[in-house]
Length: 138
Ligand code: ZN
Image (cartoon, rainbow, N blue to C red; front, top):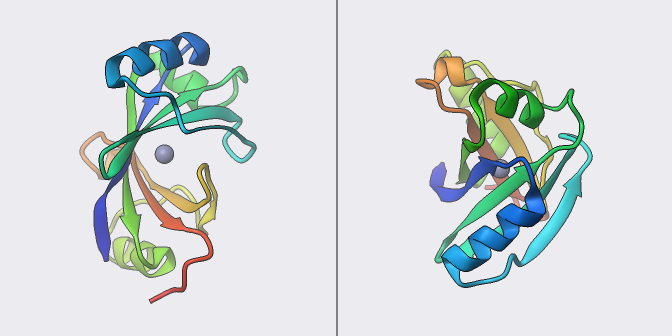
């Protein structure tokens, strides 16, 4: 099952200044900052009620985030949905004709298994599926 919007990912050029800005905007500090090796990005997370804002910065020009910023500038990068069983949802979406960016879920930020759906198959929006690690599969 696809559940609530877990977070919205925003690509930023400079994480430190973006952190300051979002701290002012949300009147709250990020609860976590983390380097994600699989994506070559540094992320920071803010709680916004039942969901989150993820800021993403990359110093690596080959990373998806750097390429995104180069092409489109800073801004909303992806929308992430929480799922109970990521492999099940990946299989379902594939059968529906969606193009997935990986064959298997992999370790993403914030203790999650993640998988992305190509924006070409989702009206120009990069979709992330994420499943909390260590949670029993349903
Ligand atoms: Zn994300």
